[in-house]
Image (cartoon, rainbow, N blue to C red; front, side, top):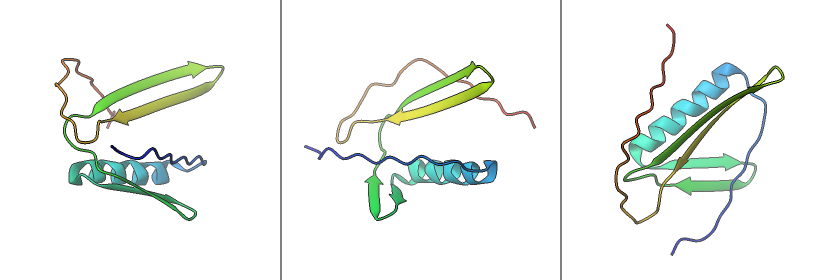
Length: 91
């Protein structure tokens, strides 16, 4: 059974920094290993198998939020979902 751990980080970053973090997360998912760090805390993740993806966008009072949430079960296989998501970027 996996230990319960928690890692949290909040900060204000410029667009280039956010892109760098998202690319690192993407590369980590592809490799099956992501290491998060802040201050003296390190947090290792090993995404594998089928991952759950949640995307939520909200606009209210001139503020916009985009939440991307990934989840998976350690040491357990899941059944694939039929829901497809489309994300487009204007070039």
